[in-house]
Image (tube, rainbow, N blue to C red):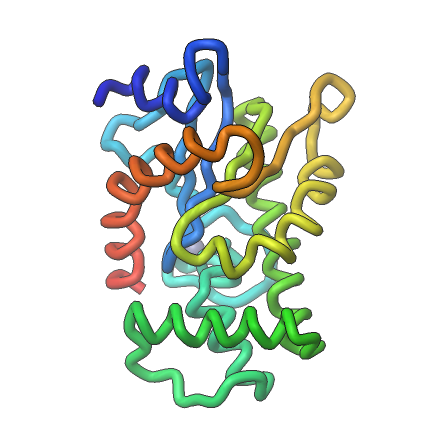
Length: 216
Ligand SMILES: [Zn+2]
């Protein structure tokens, strides 16, 4: 599938002129970039590698040598570790593999949904940090839309959609010129197109996410 076709799918057809980013919430956090209907891939296919955007200066140390990157503060493994520290989830944390991370992360989200204040704080704080990364990206690229998806999105969607849109609006350098829409996959009239885009992105981004996990 050519870039243009992919972009057209993402944008929901020929009438959907689109400049937007797709935030992929997996065991890594990455983004797909579409500018004026063209998928941006970069020289080595790694455009959208956003894990080391600093969202919390002075925050948790990252394997890149900096502190407070998206990767070291906001990916599911980190939130699960925080939940264990806070006593929301039972430990131990060693040897957490993909399915175990998903399971623990679901338990954390369920605790937040049930009103556990520590769980709520962990998820809500991550929404603030991820929104900072999104603002950096949307300000640099001047997109009009942010679409969230990926294997860990469903679990986060309710709390994130209550917070991230307003945070991204506040953080937008172009807020007086145009709105930035923040949506989740499967939400709204473009559900089919966004779902198809998700499939495409799972194929293109998932291997990278796994690599990030292994590197971590
Ligand atoms: Zn980093």
